[in-house]
Length: 89
Image (cartoon, rainbow, N blue to C red):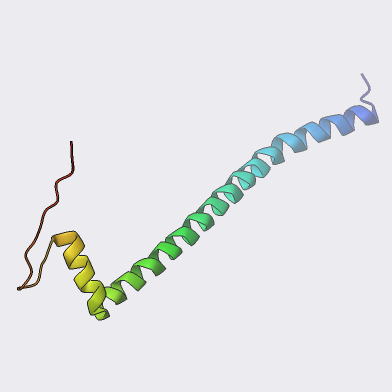
């Protein structure tokens, strides 16, 4: 039985495909993971910048400190009377 040139080329192509396709697929998956991680990193850097700004304001801005104390903790000054407004139900 004689193997023709086109059969040899086909056989070689199949062997090369079997060898290299898994590697190409792995590279494609890793590239997608890399893109996802870069996007996540960018979002985390933006969040980190916002948190640093807020921390700086908390440390230095007395008006911001007072605002947060009033809103989050219900702190009032000595001469103020707290009033609680109850909504209609």
